[in-house]
Image: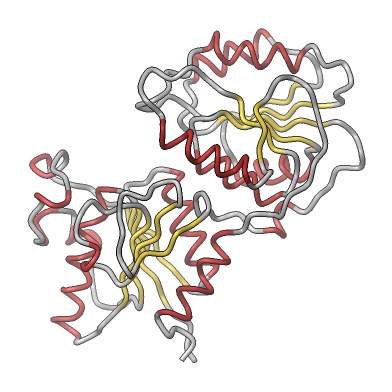
Length: 316
């Protein structure tokens, strides 16, 4: 059987790229990334109000020629919903290719537009026969990349997210957590990884105030440094604003703490997600103490891929 080929559609955010790429890799397909750009007229329209036409996104930049017709389209995020639907119809009409289309997250449009939809268990607003529920978010890390390299020493990897519509991500709120770490004299090393959403001003403040030799800072989110920091850690702390990064950290099977931040609007979806991970004994709230516990490593991309292969008969 020839290798299947995927087109991955996102608006370019790291969390979305991680999800679509993680699924494509777990499906053992080749893939091309395509960043969706919407005309001003359509940028703020919800999917159910957006016309399903080629003019609603950068169609001509994506479909430059017919040399790479996909077998599967995987999209993630609001901006990629309509492009996924339009592209499937386009290839069906032009080549009579009944390619499969998958969307990750609630598309806020009829599920019938997709062969499969993948949504996390903590987001149960949508129900349909073609929905697969994931525990947390899919992601592009695999077990081989984060093989344990810790030799029994206390090493924390602290992963920073950034502001969103629920959290301001103020430096004084993060300072509280860094002080808890700074007061722990039994640590050999602290790896601080900043994401693309982390404000540089916050990162600069933390790295200047907490500058002991054992604090190692990385502002680039270089994937190799990111996975090495997970492999080296005995304990992991992730800020509460990112379900994607918490899900990524859970692939390690290592004690995983969540650094809670004050929210300025109701974050019930985050709370539901966090509670589901607490129930699975994956996470605890960070209070400065370092405990040891175990849980089953979470590798949802791999588990979901097996279900997709069966449902869509991809192994035939």
